[in-house]
Length: 257
Image (cartoon, rainbow, N blue to C red):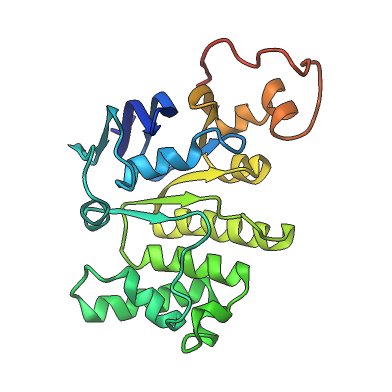
């Protein structure tokens, strides 16, 4: 088995006195899409922010490509191969679409390579070519999500962190975005850590998954097996079987191989 590209161990991060995540440990293997599922407030976004340096964990460690990066600044983390596509897209609305893409490559100096990569982004998101000189704020929500992913790709990341890429999108656009995510993984070899509330799409797209509940990982396994798990089907896929609502969902972390 390959060594993990990303290895998180016993991570704890706080908002003031409130513990957002506690004792979180997981791995991301090169070439995989790994998803973290959970309800609103479970701590999913905090995990990504703790990995990319936007929040500093109080305990635990984050290792990337064999190097400890715990507590590093976001700029340093980005320059060393982790691209963060944040919740809500956070594009630059008054800059052009192409200008936003160029911002993703701000740390690069290979002009020819940057232009080639912009063309690659356009092949996955043709609408961005059509709107290249338009202000990004004029794009629809789905187009802005495409731009945010494209901007992340421009950094040539070893690992891409995707935070709720389906947020606010129609089912049709969600399906389109996830199809492109799968293609980028298969065709460009981009390793991804995906945080998503749409458990059905996430489990169908990712290879391995973790379930986060009130700041703790309570379940993990291959997505093909998680999607058949009774608790996952009831609480995240809306397919009630024999589990009883109101009981404690998981007493300990379970794992399938």
